[in-house]
Length: 87
Image (cartoon, rainbow, N blue to C red):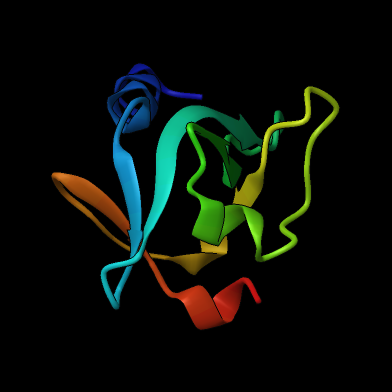
């Protein structure tokens, strides 16, 4: 993983995750990535909303909800996801 990629991924931590329809999911606690390629696989949520908990998302070994990074459609002040990609 290149240094610039590492800096970029650290910028994702703590960002609020929302759907493109404006539903709040929670905040980025951590990210899971493929060690060989550096590709981000999941965003791990902290402070998940009740709405998000009702979606039956997968959980990791630490019981954090996992949002597939493939569902991310925009990153700015918020991380915007396509909800239909994860349900």
